[in-house]
Image (cartoon, rainbow, N blue to C red; front, side, top):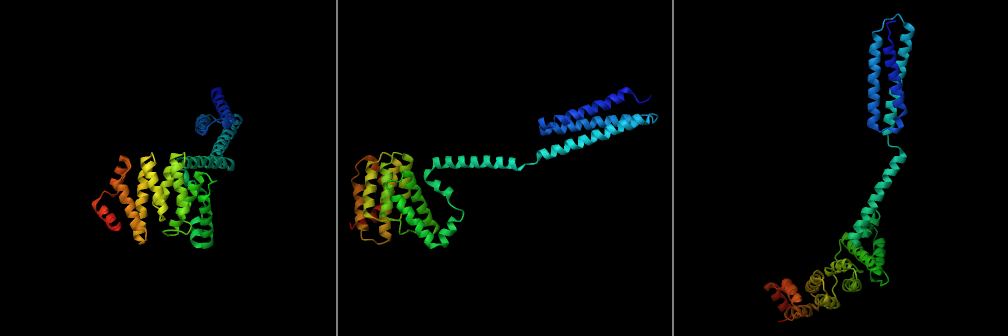
Length: 302
């Protein structure tokens, strides 16, 4: 018979190879699956070319072998189809991916809040926060009053009071205002107490940053700034305290307040009689300019 045992063996080997590939499908990674399918198909094509060379005197054998080829190719097609479905993202996989992303985002937010504690409130605001603040006056008034109560509440943590202060300040800017009824001496005093007494240096810095450029005018603030300038051991905080003193003077001057002369006199006293070299250096840097000195002297009535 012209149809050799070698050809039959080749076909049977190809069948065995595909069946083994199919059985290993669920344990094999995607690139390996495709390679197995390709190798198997090459085996089929080789077997098919051998069959074409066979004489047709053994029709039954040839028919059986052709059926084997058809069966093998069907298995290859199923294998490839299974490979494609394996690539599809199932709902369960999608949920897992989203959960991992959410966890990573939460970790990033926690780290950001740890690095800059007072702005942690921002991540919890509703999406329509700014629009409601601008379009619903009652909502804005109620929220600002709540924030003020939180700022001045001594039973709140320093961090929570700072968050409330930062949010109140943000609300003021969002509303396009220079000040708010809730933005008064009590909240400034609360911030300066944190700046002077907190055990956390990061919170001390952020507290005086929030208040030193505030639009609040009160002679008591000048005294508190002066104490921090003269006593604090952090140079950056002392500089902000000096800026706070000057800010009080500029606000009084712009508003033509009655105490603008008194503030100018206080600043000149600190300038002329600093308690130490550190204060002298900071004040010299702030108001040592001849034009600034002339303005202060004029305001002080000299």
